[in-house]
Image 1 (tube, rainbow, N blue to C red):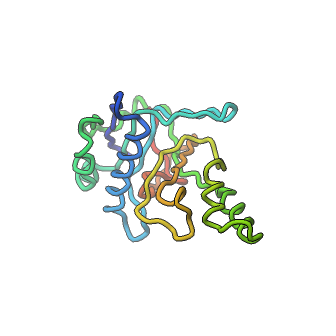
Image 2: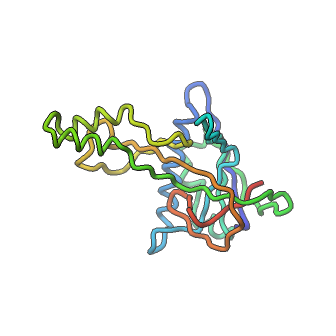
Length: 204
């Protein structure tokens, strides 16, 4: 990854940082989806320079910055970040495309999606089998309080919903993000969320 641009969020009294993450990340997800290959992957990766997570206290913070990495400036021209975020120009600052400052790189990290199977579905199925409640009613109930992980997350809004999901669970989902210290990788394989379980991005 030789080039990057940085997106700085500008929350205010009316727009929270969580709301901005949800809206901005959805647009970036769509932007990446528009350039994905046949394997549904891209060669554009994200990092979260202010990411913090304390596993002992189970507290974390995803920060107010996002870095977008690519191997060439042409990739950014193809991605068209400015166009995809045009409706949010008052709430973000998008830097120019810059070369990664190799003399300032302190290491590498992998930012990956953490998918934890919630016990909400399992509990709802058990209630439905017993005939106490319908699967939909039971799932709506358990989705209110069943936790999966305390990792930092971005609240996402899906384009479609499953018929099996109850009203309280079907449109929104949490994109949990886990950070792992890693070696420099030669691969550039990222999902349309800009995340990867195998490819690292530089930290500086």
